[in-house]
Structure formats: structure tokens, C-alpha cells
Length: 372
Image (cartoon, rainbow, N blue to C red):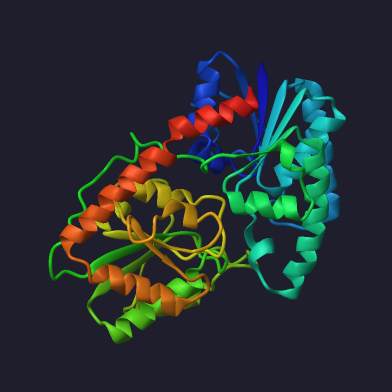
């Protein structure tokens, strides 16, 4: 069969779907990936896939550009005649499914990898766009044969809002994590040393980075020298949800935060850390947390959709309240008070939970059941 993968960003193809594509190609099927530009094409083709481009403005709301994206996808599908289309994130899910339906594709699969800024922001603009997004989602999901969700909260919300019918939905445990690549590492926490805390995230409000920076200030003021907080990730001020670079730089200058630029391989940063933190307001399933768990790191995440699935509270990490810097600081402080032996027990629990729920091999086996 020929499977067309409709991607929002080329990096997500090799980073999040690489193992899945290798498995599909290994079974003798053809994979064609369509992305918005020519970045990382060599990495995608190394998976065994072909690649082509259809321009897309991932974050834009211009209806004429979205219509052009839909039209160009139709032309591509008409030319390639895939047996299956697989689109993920909002625009590929909506316009990819509609284009595939209009061209008579036999099997159309969409995946919601998280609902993002529109569904978490409380601004008036976001509320308006959320209404429009729900209408478009309803159209796109009506065209799909199967809609895959990465956590039960997103699935329940979409069904409850009559965006998708329950009988065409499925759930998988995120994108999975390659546990050979993200291999277990010693925790290396010594008594009396500061707790080394790492957050890997784009600097977005919806990812809880604002609360993370404020928590760093609280911890430095109340319990100085007890912990060291690091943020690793891109700062893109063109995004409406972005934290301002000067806010991060101010925290660094004040000595409460370390900042590391985005990098393709985060394993070194994870290995240097003692715990991983993500204060996101909502996720599909956070891949950075899964990678940290595979590497034997306890985690602190918000008790929010997508995040809470990664933590057995008090066993492999702690849950904290979403949108609360004070409660995030409380959870990090609680982790800092644990002995190296206690943290090591939580680290082993993280690894065990990751093997049980999130190994990419078991996740992909479930994905293939819906795709092929």
C-alpha cells in the first residue's frame, strides 16, 4: 500500500514519527511524506520515505492561505493516489482529511496530538478562534474513518462537544519513546548538592514556562541553594503565545535560571539533570517527559490532560496544580528534600512505567492496527 503522511513540520516527522515510518516501510509499504518546506529532508528520506512539499502556514489564520493548502493537498492526492492518508495536528487533520475524502481515498486516519493554545488560552481572541476551530474540526473528523487521540481527556472533550462520534475514535499512549535511544542513566544525585531541575519546552505560556520561571524565583527566595532550574528550548516571539526573550534573560541575569538553546539531541541535558519538570496547561502526551522517564528521571508535571497520564503521584514523581507557580515550587521543593536513595526509587518507577505504557514498539503496534 501507499501511505501519505501529512505533517505540519518536517522535524516532527523524523523526531516523533520516525520509528513508525521505519516500521511501515519495513513491512513493504510505500510512505510518502508531505511537509511545508525542505528542512530536514535528508533525515526523512533516511527513514525510507519519499518526500514532497505543500506550503502551509502552521500558526496563521488566513482563510485564503488555508484554502490554498487544501487545494494543493487535493492535487497531490489526485496525482499520488494513496491508499491511506495519515494527518496529525490541526491543519493536516482538518484539511488533509477533507482533501482525502474529496479524492476518494480508501482509508483516512487523523490524530489529535494535543489541542494547544486555542483550547488553553483564556484570551478573547483565542475563544473566538476556538469556536472556528471546533467547526473546522467537526468537518475534518466527519471525513475521517478513524480519529486517534493521545489521552482520554481530549477524546472525551471532543466527543462531549459533538466534534467527533465516539465510534470512530481510538486512544494510543502518545507517540511513544524509543527506549534503546533514550537509555537509562544513573541519577547521580549526591547528598547536600542542589537538585538539578530541567524543563525542555518551547518558551510558551501554554507550556507553563511563565509559571516555571516564577517558580524559580520563589525557590531562590525561600530555599536558596536548594535547587538549580534550567530551561531548554526555543524562544519564538512571532508566536502569540510566546514568552518574551527578555523575561528569560532577566531570570538568567538574576541568577535564578539557566537557559539552553534548542538542540536536536537533548540526552546530554537529561543525563545531567536529577528531575524533569513540565508545567504545561494541556498536552497530548508530553514526549520530553517520556524521554526523561526512559532515562530514569523522576518527573513533576501538572495535573492536566495529557500530563497526568505520565505520573503515578508520589511513585515516579509528583503532580502540581496547573497555572500555579506556587504549587510548582512546592512540588520541586518536596523533590529537593528527598534523599538520593528516595529519588533513585522514583527513578526506577519512572523507567518501569515508561516500559509498561510508552515503549514506542507497543505504541506503534497499536498505530499500525489503525493505519494498515
